[in-house]
Image (cartoon, rainbow, N blue to C red; front, top):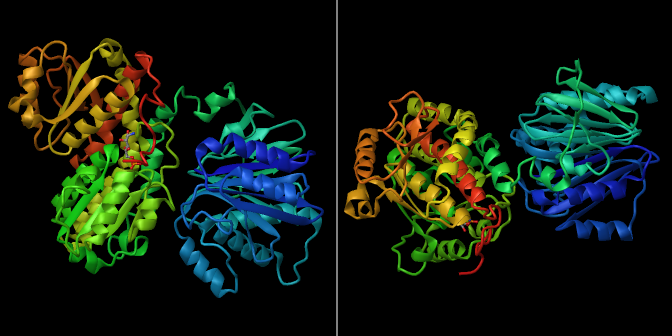
Length: 622
Ligand code: AGP
C-alpha cells in the first residue's frame, strides 16, 4: 500500500516528509516523491526505487517550503518509474495530488479530459484526479478566472469535492494548490487517511507512524469524509460538503507497534487485513461479465477463453493451495480441464503442454524461482501465461502474457495470509468470467456468483470473530507435536493450507489430507495425541465428513471441527463456527479460523511468528 505524508506548519517541510515516509517504508513501495509550495510555486521531486534516491535528488536540488505532500508508491496502475511516481500534477503544474487506492473509472474520465485538451504524462489513475480537479477549478472560477485570495480555499475544496463525486473506487487522496498557501485538502474512501494534530502545525498520514514522532493526537477520517488541513487547525466535511465534527484519539503505541496497526505481529495484522484484500482485489472486476476484467484489464480475448482446452496451474506453497481451489472452481464452472501441481515438479517431469494451453502462474512475490521457471518452460512449449501476482513489475509479471494482479498491499509475515485471500478473490473472478466467456454459465448463474462474491469481504470479516475461540483451543493443544487436517471438496485444499500455516510458524508436524483418504493409511496414526482438525462446513459432502469425523473419534483422536453456524454441530471436542457461506466461497471463509489457530499455537510456543526459522518470504532460488 502507498505511503502518504502531508504537512502544514511553520517548519521546513522536506525533512518532516522524508522522516514520515521512512516511518512508512514497512508498507513496501517502488518509487517516491514530494511536492512543496513556496512563494506561490509548487516544486516536485520524484525518484523510482528507494527513498535514498529521492533524498539524493533533494540533496542535489533542495526545495524549501512549509506546506507539502510526500508519497511512496506501491504500483497498481503503471510500472514503477519516476514518471509514474506521485505527486502528480495538472497541466498547469499548479496543483498536485497524491493518492492511495484504485480509481476504477479513471480510463473513462481520462478519455474525456484528453478530449478536452488535457495532456497526461503518466499511466496512473492518480494523474487523472489532478486533471479532473483542474477542470473543476476552471469551471468554478468562471471565464474571467477572478480569484480573491480569501476564496481560494473554499474554491479548492469545492473543486476536489466535485471531482470526487465523479470518481468510483478507493482513495486516500490529498491535494495542494499553489493559489492556496498553507492549505491541504484530504479525502478518504476505503483507503486509510489520518490527521495528526500538532501545536501550530498539522500532519497527514496513511498510517500513524508517519507523524507519531510529532503528535499522538490523531483524527481518523471515515469513508466519504474530507478535511481542510491548515497549520492553525483542521475542519471536516462529508462528500456533500456538510460540516462534520471529528474527535481526536490519543495513540498510545510505540512506533513498532504502530507499524503493526496495534497488533503484536505483522501476521495478525495481515490476517485482519483480509477483508480489505478481498475487497481491493475484487473492486471493479466483477461486472460486466462479458467484455469484463479478463478482456479489458488482462487483454485476454473471449475467443482465447472459448478455445481453452487445458489449464496448468503452476505455483508453490500457499499459492499452490490457492491454485488447487481454483482447479475445483474452473473445472466446475468453466468446464476446462485444470492440472495443478508444484512448479518444482512441473518444470522437471516433462509435462505435456500444447500450444493453446493456458498456464495459471500464481505467486505473491512474482519472484519465486520454481514458478518463474515453470512458466517460462510452458511458454517455450507454446502455452500462454496468465500470472496472478501481488507485485507489479515483478519477474513473473514481465514474463507473462496476461496479468491479473491481486491488490493486497505488501505482505510482511512470511506465512502468507492476506495474499492467499487475494489470490482466491482474483481466481474466483477469473473462474466466473472464464465460464461466462465460454457460455458454461448463463447470465442468471453468473449474476448469482457475482452477488456471492460481493458478500465475501463481509463474510471474512465475520470469520475473524473466531479469534477468541481459536485462542482458547490453542491453549489446550499448543503442546501437541502432530496434527492431521482433513477436508473434502473445496475444503481439502483448505486443510492443506491450514496444515502449511501451522507447520511453518509453530514447527509442529502437520499434514493436510483428503478426508476420504483417511482409511487408506493416515487412520493408523490416530490416537489421543494426534488431534484431527476437520473442515466440516456446509457442503454437498457434509454427511461424508461427519462419517470421517466418527472414524477418527473412534480411534481416540480429539476432533477440532470447523463448522457452519446454525448447522448441527459435528461431535467434536472443539468447534470453530464460521458464518454460513455459499459453498463456492467456503475456502476463503473457512481458512480464517485456522490461520488464527495456527497463529495462537505458534505464539504460545514462543515461535517467531513473522519470521519463522529456515524460511524466506520469497524463495528466489531453487
Ligand atoms: C506461504 O505461507 C509460504 N511462506 C510459502 O509457501 C509461499 O507461499 C511460497 O514460497 C510461494 O511464494 P510466492 O507466492 O511469492 O510465489
